[in-house]
Image (cartoon, rainbow, N blue to C red; front, side, top):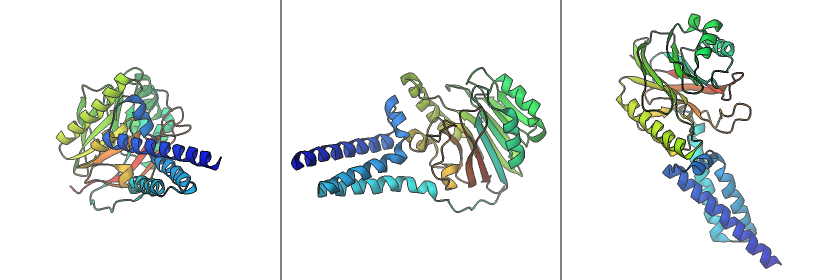
Length: 314
């Protein structure tokens, strides 16, 4: 009986280990198969699987398995550690606060959004799933008194996006060839030229949408490289820091503000029981992130994200 139990435990341990190694490979390679894209959301917990395998190997006295599982667990923990360590601030420009919120097909509480802008003295607002009715609600709530400049593409259901700013916006553009309709505009803050994008990547909910999701992230990265000056892209990326496609976007000249601020593994979706950080503020790597945190907005299925940033000097 002991031999049977030991054999069964070894089979389970190796199965867990093989699965965990396979998921690590998927995380690193950026596979776009829909089920694997969903599973990568759980990457912060992969180390737990490796630890369970290590315990089983220890009980069954499998040295090779134990060493392999422990090594894998350490590797997986090490991948997540940088998210908890803030970078040293070096920028010398003005401090600003950026707020991004998915308003859930225009159903989110507009007054709560305006209250958040007022309370935290936000300078820029990016909105996703912006509808004409939500624009009207924000206007009635007094957004124009706080952020008087805007450029929007208000559209039905989930297609629309919009930008609001404390400083004048120029050259507003609807970006083409995306699943939804991001908007981009320029502004100048205390002499610092900033290109701002309200971005919403396609949700990878079907095989076809998953292909579009990957294309959206790749195209957004290409556009970011073409923009002059300081770049801020805020919105619902429908991707976490464990998706290779997002890491490719927020790298080599750009950075996820939450990671730069050492904000850890906070999550933004779904708002009632958050499982994944889908909402981000991505900036040029010349921008410091001083504080990034989630913000509850009534009637939205996402938590908003507030990022306090320091721009490079003019």
